[in-house]
Image (cartoon, rainbow, N blue to C red; front, top):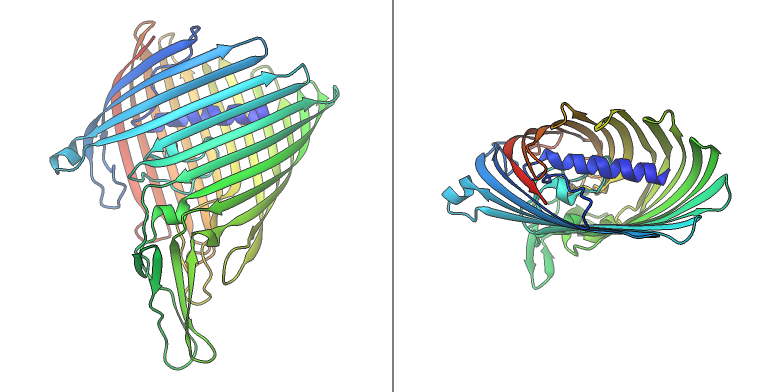
Length: 463
């Protein structure tokens, strides 16, 4: 079951890379241990800074990749490094630095100790600006930052899984995951000043007794989202038939926010008419989450498979200095994959989970802080081999999110993306592609909406 989820998620993530002008280059599959490839593309992005006004630019992308794959008798090892260099003509004309750079390193290791014990380790480290690069590895997972973030931002996602077949009918899967985020934008201007690492708050008072006020300002991305997310899970699996497996599982997840900066302020007047202040800091959003779920995986035919995973999550936002809260939410992960001809397949899926968000609003009456979002994601991808040399890809994704806590409590966001790509294999080593990407965010928070259109065309080489 875990293999099905991981492979489907990684495939969707790989396809999602086509959603930007920074999409991966030519196909990296090669019988050689070493593989080198590169792509050169021209593009136009009509809203590269992600704003409601929209500012467009022509540009050029150069993206080389080098990979190593070493299959052995009981061990399979691989790594892949991709560098991206992006030139924006509009920034050059404005006297700004016209270049962006990105880095992505993928490592994986599979080792079979024997016929019943197998370990899998993978790690993806990324530095860049686009949400597809910095968000979760799986495109089916919700992403709390659906827009481009300037700077040398870093994200790392690591997983380790031990799969054990105890009997012919019973097996287990024990997994550990760690995601780490570090944003370049540091230092806050929220309701005061930062000086020598200390934060100054000027409390306000309301004449006539009780009064409440939440100061406005700007918290940094580092203060809001620098964090480490860890989880450990155990699945108990029953193989009812060769093509059918059911399981029951538990996952414990904890999120630690590491920005060490103020992210919100709640000022009020107490019963004695004295001015008081509560300063929320990054770690005010620390939380623990428990998941309990059931699942079923079934191979309907050789070309059609599906999986269902559902349960509940219980989250304890224990570090809120004013009002620690607990909540119960549904949890779901459903997927369906159908290969209808060689090189052609379609995937559909749905997930529902909680996720971090860059919004940390404070309710001026109750003092509650936005802790996270609860999000539903619907995704679909179509890969169609039009001819022996021409491949078409269509990817769609829609995320519907509801903020939990703060003045934004129950406010919703809808994030939609669509990409279309055509790739023509000119020869064994050379290819050409053209594509279009559309992104749209509709938010109940003023000033957060945006739409973005991107087109690109270029050539690739693979050796």
